[in-house]
Amino acid sequence: MTARIIDGKAFAATLRGRVAEGVAAFREETGRAPGLAVVLVGADPASDVYVRWKGKATLAAGMVGTEHRLLAETTQEALLALVAELNADAAVDGILVQLPLPGHIDSAAVIAAIDPDKDVDGFHVVNAGRLAVGADGYVPCTPLGCALLLEDVLGDLSGLDAVVIGRSNIVGKPMAQLLIDRNCTVTIAHSRTRDLAAVVRRADIVVAAVGRPEMIRGDWLKPGATVIDVGINRVEDAAGRRLVGDVAYDEALAVAGAITPVPGGVGPMTIAVLLRNTLVAAHARAGLAKPA
Ligand code: NDP
Image (cartoon, rainbow, N blue to C red; front, side, top):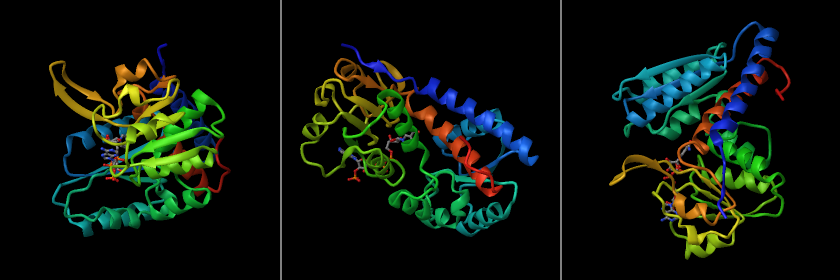
């Protein structure tokens, strides 16, 4: 048996197409395009690539994208002043501050300064709280993208055993919450989990968000499990420089029922959901009903 390969790239393209239609309808209704402001502090190469992708996708969807690139030595005060400016700017519906920020800046303070109703990354504690209590809010893009892929592959997730490996605020915790909301029985594993292989082996759904190349082995998986690999790890070996996930892909292919590749799985979904969140924010700010 070979696992079905979950084509996140194709699914994300469909989602971006739907967002573009929504943007066109929004322009018609309001006379303006939704606006997304992306802030990058410093010149981290991976962040630079992500910001460029986000900028391109924003424009392709028909939105107004603005990039604010600040020097690595920018002070926290200057960054907070920019966030305040963007909060007050009527043309800006969504604000994204690219993480990680340089060490001298308190990321939590910067995220806390973003207007929760423009927090399209879903990192503000108000949005984390909304997700925790099941209220409408902005959900972090990567886990929401994973949930959409899982529903596409499996349909109703009710009653399935899910294991989320990783408990970060931006991936693991919101992922677990989204799976609980979809009636899964959820286990959250992390660096202190005992016998991770045994924990993973009972899961119908495995979401790996660890940041360790190919840590999850094929023989840890329950046959037929659906595997969502969030990890993006840059490795260099005899095969050259490449990106690998947190799951040993070739081994998993022989055991899993379905699996996301790296790259081309979860990554493209993150940007598509960011655009979707921005469209939703624009509707809310314009007093319009949430788009379909
Ligand atoms: P963090 O470093 O914030 O969290 C990693 C989590 O993995 C922690 O909860 C940690 O546990 C856990 N962990 C570390 N080592 C082990 C281990 N040996 N066994 C079990 N659990 C372990 O990472 P993020 O959540 O931000 O990101 C995770 C991965 O996803 C990274 O590779 C990142 O690049 C990728 N990513 C991909 C995105 C995409 O768009 N596809 C978006 C965001 C992230 P503990 O809490 O105990 O330390």
